[in-house]
Length: 166
Ligand code: GDP
Ligand code: MG
Image (cartoon, rainbow, N blue to C red; front, side, top):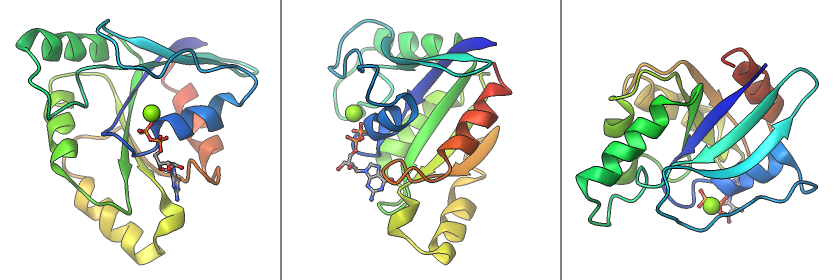
């Protein structure tokens, strides 16, 4: 099995950290600079029975810049062409306007969206429960997975769930 997976989330939620953890240091991450193309490849993960190409989607996480309709449409179109989207949020930081912007974009795509609650190492279980309740009805999420990208918690669960959507 193989497929493309988009990663979205506002700055500093842990997208690069998650990529490093999933792909490992051996394979260099190709680019982390903003660019104007539809999608930039973050990295390629080869597992026993699957291969996943991770894509960053410019235009989906820049609510402060004056993006033209074209960029937003291009981002939405790019997200329609992947097998699944990982929407990362920072559970310690809480819900913000940047999240709202992204959720509005995600509403226009039919692709399954995973809600990835990152940085669970920074909060207790009760706060995690509250955060899940806060986010879960904002979109029809295919999966909701709490992780710590930094410490590596639950990354295997995330990858095993992703395989099911390829
Ligand atoms: P990006 O802008 O979405 O790519 O975010 P980065 O991957 O650059 O991470 C932003 C900051 O959050 C860095 O200082 C990371 O070390 C930190 N970070 C990322 N994931 C976690 C996590 O699971 N737990 C904690 N405590 N910090 C994290
Ligand atoms: Mg980054």
